[in-house]
Length: 288
Image 1 (cartoon, rainbow, N blue to C red):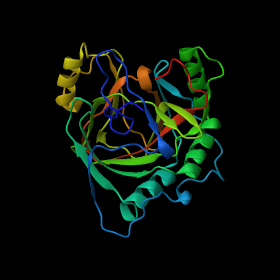
Image 2 (cartoon, one colour):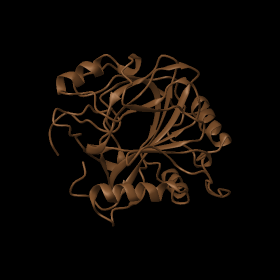
Image 3 (cartoon, rainbow, N blue to C red):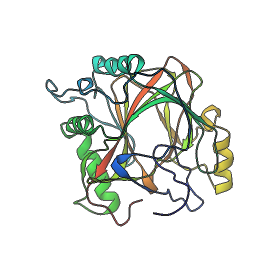
Image 4 (tube, rainbow, N blue to C red):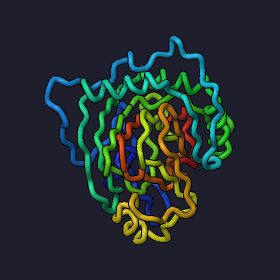
C-alpha cells in the first residue's frame, strides 16, 4: 500500500492535478478518518444499526422508473425506502444511536465538511437487504449497463453493497464541500464503483450538486475553490442538483470517473442520509 495520505470515500477526496482519484484498500470495509470527532451523546448508546430497521419480508419492489440525472454517471430512484422506514432510522439514531460530530476545514487533501454521523463497518446483513432491493428494482440493470460500457467489460457486474454503512445528519449551516469519491477494496467482495445515497428526510437547501464540466483547470484552482467551501458560492453553471426526497436513492459513479460534487449548505430542517457503496466482483484493469 502506498505510504501517502489516504483520500477515501469517507473523507471526500480532492482530485489531483492529473485528474486521478486515489483509491484505498479497506480491511472489513473500514475507512480511515483523519477528522475531528466528538460524541454528541453520553455512554450506553449502541454503535450498530439493528436489523429491524430494514426488512424485506413485505417488500414488493419499487414500481417507479429511474431518473437519469447525468448519463452514465448519476441516477435516482424514488420510494426505495418507505416513509415509515425512513422515520425508524432517524428515530433510532436520535434516541439510541451514537451520533458523532465531525468537522474539518478544506485542505490540500480533503474538502470542507461539517455534520454528525454514525458508522457501522460490518453491517453485512443490512447491506445485503439494501442490495436485495436494488436487484428487484429497475435501477440496477441500468447501472450495470453503464459500468460495463465504461470499462468495456460485459461481465463486470455488482455482487453486493458495502457493509460499511454510514448515516449522516446535517443541521442548518452544515455542508460538504466540492470533492470526489474514491474506490475502496472490500475484503472477500471486490471493489466499489458507485456511491449509494438513501435520503431519509427532506430539508431546505442541502442538495447534492454534480458538476458535469470541471471548473478546476489546475490543482491550484481546485484547492482555491474547495477552500472557499463552495456550497455557498454561485458557480452552479454546468451542474445538476438533486434535492433530497424522503425514501429516494441516488447512485453515482465514483473513482477516476467520479463527477466533482458537493452537499450544499442546509438552510432549514435537518438532512439525514444513509450511505453505502455498490461493490463489483471482478476488478477492472482500467478502474480507479
